[in-house]
Image (tube, rainbow, N blue to C red; front, top):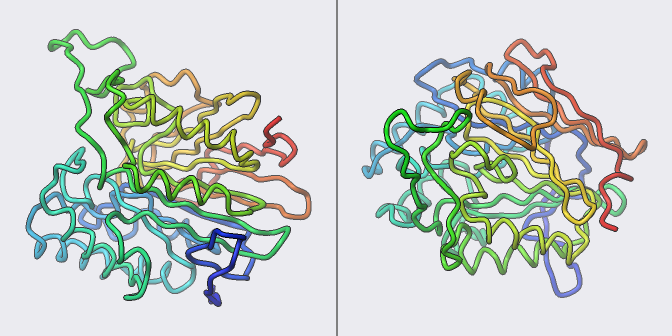
Length: 345
């Protein structure tokens, strides 16, 4: 999709990246290791012909402090025929997670975060005059379409500013059933996931007029039971986002996430508003064991094979269809939501 990119004025707020071309199909995925295989989910994703594809993190498995090694890992992704075809056919957006950031479960203590950021931005062809290159962190926002069909995509950075998370204290063999991770919610409200600057920016972005809004988080926002990295590790940060959504009446907003090597849909209630988090993870490798983890907010079943997420926006019929597809392009999970349901009271 070729788009004319500009900036639009929204009162005192400006959209960082805007295209007048309306979009109706967004695909996304996470956990993509080029060494495992060059095909993965690309054929199925290409078959969907998405207007936009969002890389949600672990786009490669770098896990290094050596930027030469990191660049070499990106070169492996670049060499993938599927990646090349997808980049040519769809608008590509991306954020990162821990493995392409540079270290497993990494946060702001990772010593090469500035250098890794530059490698990331260079690989995804971020313009030299982009605001993304003028501030720490890789968060960004994009709007597509004109009034009545405007979709905003907010890409969060859950790595660059994140404080160290508290670990669980289970001894070997004592971990409760359904807990597969090693973190627990913190009571220390000074700890941050996004950092002050990104929070201020996010509050501004939630005031940008949009008819549909997608918040992309590399880690799960709603599924917080399983002990893995998620927004529930820092519950005060999760509640802060919920308050902002309510304050600015961010209707027709949903979350997408990756990280966990399986797919699921989660839903919670925010003062009468149903917030959904569609997780798709495992473009090249999946984890059936992790899919058995506890999730009290899960809608339907989990899917623990290779997968990608698809969001279909029906601007005329005013609804959104959330799907998860398998490597053959078959629909594994599906949930349709009318816009009328996605309203703050």
